[in-house]
Each structure stands twice: as structure tokens, then as C-alpha cells.
Image (tube, rainbow, N blue to C red; front, side, top):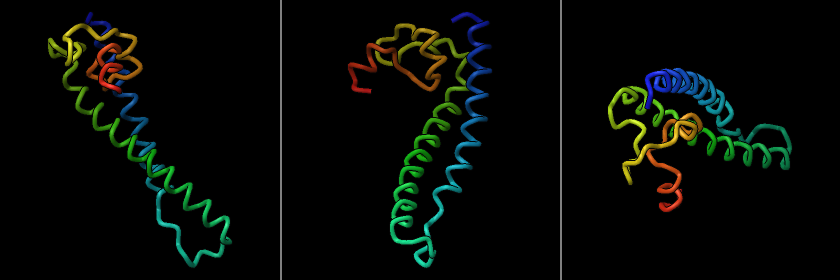
Length: 114
């Protein structure tokens, strides 16, 4: 990977981390418990509980992605960064820009079911 690509990726990862940290805080607020004595009506309360579970899933995904990005950031300058951990072939730069936290090329990711 070229130095300019690494610099671009570094900046991109930092921006994604910043954005995800904001998302995590927002999701935390949206996943606060729904009080049983809240007088919002039965149907609305069920909708609130359902919405809470959807937001919890989004929170967990955001936390996971954030941790993977924070792991990837210091490794950008490693000689093996950007190589598939399975086949050791270079991961296309476009894929790294979309999913900088990935450790697999498309072919290996598909073969592994992810």
C-alpha cells in the first residue's frame, strides 16, 4: 500500500472513530429502560420496547466496529497491514476504505461466510 493511501486511510479511520463515538452516545440514550409506570399507553409502550431492542443491536454493532477500528489504527504502518489474514494477498484499497476494520479480502470473507 502506498504512503498516500495509508495517510488517506488513517484520516478516514479517525473520522469513522469520531463518528462512531457520537453514535454510541446517542444509542446509549435510546437504550435506556422503558419505565413500566410510564403513561404512554400499552401499544406505544410495546413500540418503545421494540425500538429499544433495535437500538441495543445498533449500539452493540457500533461498539464492535469502534473497537475494531481502534485496533486497526495503530497498525496502519505495519508492513503486513492491508494483507488478508487468510490468504496473505493484498486487500483492495477500496475495500479498506469501506471496511477499514476488515482483515480479509472479499474472496476469503465470502468463503468464511462473513
